[in-house]
Figure (tube, rainbow, N blue to C red):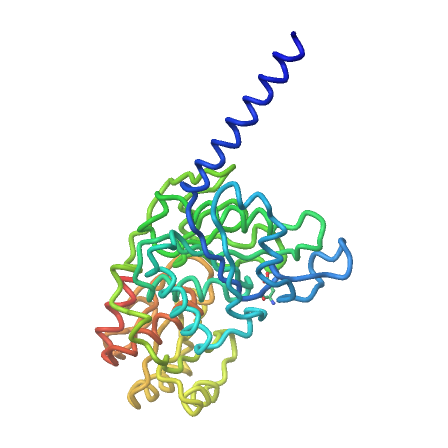
Length: 355
Ligand code: DGL
């Protein structure tokens, strides 16, 4: 009698668990994982290869199959947009990816989108999407610092957390997010600041929160314009103007700037030293280039802080723009977008204050 009672109890518990799972299947968010390549899709020769490996090898369906736990938190399907290392992204690929993400965001059957991406230029892509995709649905960009073949690989949990975040209602309306190493960063602020650690990504202004065991914890929200509140729209963009970055150091070469103009740059991001400083022997070169119609944007090679207008240089007098807190590679993205709408210095500066 006792055995029958125990067997019946076990059967009832199993049935109610299955029922609960069946019930939640319909309540689970529909998440699309758009894969582009990178280390998260990488493979090394041995489990000890955490830094030497080939990026962009594992297809998205294999990435998803490798994390069966994803089925507990979302209805997931994958798309393979590209299979490249992210240093090979181009403006054309940014536009192509942005248009696909925009189309997915418009699909009522899609609740959120995750983009797997190499970490080298992940910050440019996340900032670009933050500026051009008009949706309040969660768009989460994720990568990894170790290939899935390595001991203590970080890709599985990063991708799992990104899917959890993309399916989290409180993540709506916060712009494009980056989920790395348990942190939730804004697509605007996230930057790769170390080249071989799982804690590579951070923001000078700190994370928005964390994802821990299926739960997003928020501690602040973005204040800059993004997504639904952006004047830039991927659906109307067909190309991006060329923008060059010149990296500041001692003993600079003025010819580098002229070479950038000759190559078609419509703006030059000067990754200056300190507070966006320009050497005294370069000022005339930059003033001449500005007078030719090419915009000059003062950024800094320093990771944190922000360039102060009219401090190191009389920007008003020289008709230059300051990049505010944006690092040179993000300033390049924003300058290119701003130039699709205006070549006015005051308009560009407004854009750098607002986004
Ligand atoms: N080649 C680099 C890239 O695809 C690998 C770095 C990574 O993805 O973590 O961005």
